[in-house]
Amino acid sequence: MREANDGVDAEGFIRQVPGVPFQMEYRALLAAVRYQLPALLGRHLIALYVYGSVAEGRARPGQSDLDLTLVLSDACPAGLLVQLEQRRRLLERCHGEVSKIDFDIGRRAEALAPGNRLSWGFWLRHHCRWLWGEDLARRYAPFKPEVGIARAVNGDVLTVMQRYILAHASCASPVERLGIQREAARRLLRAIQVLRRLDERGWPWTLEDHYSRAQRLHPEQRAALDFFYAEARQPQAAAVEFAQQLGAVLLWFERQLRQG
Image 1: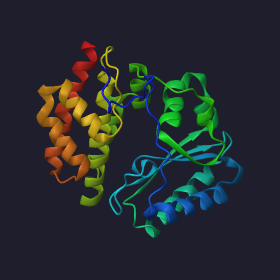
Image 2 (image 1 turned 180 degrees about the vertical axis):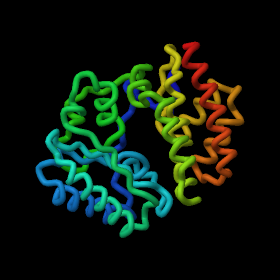
Image 3 (image 1 turned 30 degrees about the horizontal axis):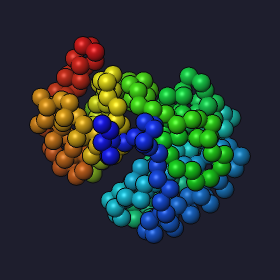
Image 4 (image 1 turned 45 degrees about the vertical axis):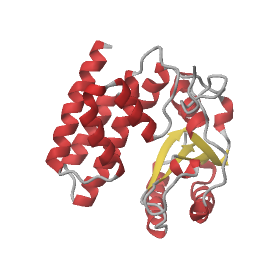
């Protein structure tokens, strides 16, 4: 029997972001984003979405990030991307209610390509909440759980994690290093779903869901999972310890991929 909190609805479709009112603490920032980004990018901004804890109404003021997906025109000039990054930093400095602002950027053709249905299509339909522009999520029907989605959304996990290792090794400050540890730990916990079994019916939604699922299915990695879950919430491990832990779990991950 399906569990009530397994991430799917009564018809077996993966649940979508609830349309709850945005938390009061973030409404001024979201209003600024809805005004400033279209004004900056003009016709080159096709669609703007929010995802993550702010979208779902469970953000913690001063601790949670603001995560935004921007879909740009295929002809958006590189110079505008430089200005966009400058605007992101300005918004970040002016709004202490979030710890960080992240832009996830794609192009319209990429978001609508048939070959990206399980990646961009699923992402827009099930993880993003529309803020401005053309709602491309309407182009896609709801999705049911399948391993192909986990693989498409997470991409080449080993390559992605190797980038984190390189970035971690070259950090210029402790603050930057801890930020990378948090991001890498969160990405790793979610990426373990790439090892999804064919008979699984549920779908993890929150970071806690991913952590609980990984503990249940990979008990031999419980100590490592506990470590990365702690780092995902409040990073504090020494650089050497984090690098060693990440290297070890990636070796395990690679063996699991080969066996699968």
